[in-house]
Length: 138
Image (cartoon, rainbow, N blue to C red; front, top):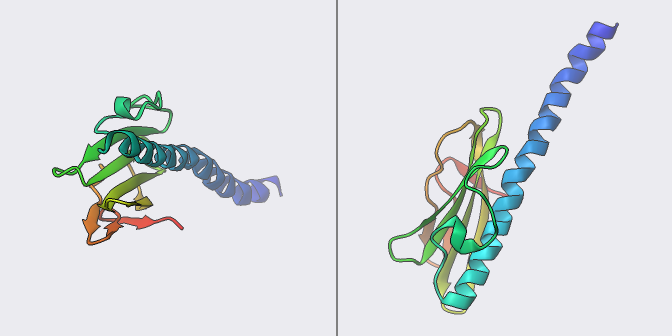
């Protein structure tokens, strides 16, 4: 009886543990996106490094490695959270200013678990798109 209960409970516990760990990536990508908006409001440019965001965020945290990649023309920035654990999904934040008076922000989650690098987001006209193999969070 105990073995049956353990067989049922263990996968559920492990799934909940992974969801809790993914909260780090999702939460910090959201904070990075908001910091990018604030940075652009002050300096009329997106931050190009973690230090420029002034969040005190280390490149490597408990479950993710963080990075900032700006497009060549500076019109778009991708905030990246690459999983350090093969059981977690990666996250990306895409921030763009397609028009002077507007900011477009998107938070994306990888479709698959793993530690793969995160591609850059893309601007398509007045909207932005998640990196390949990522989907927008609602």
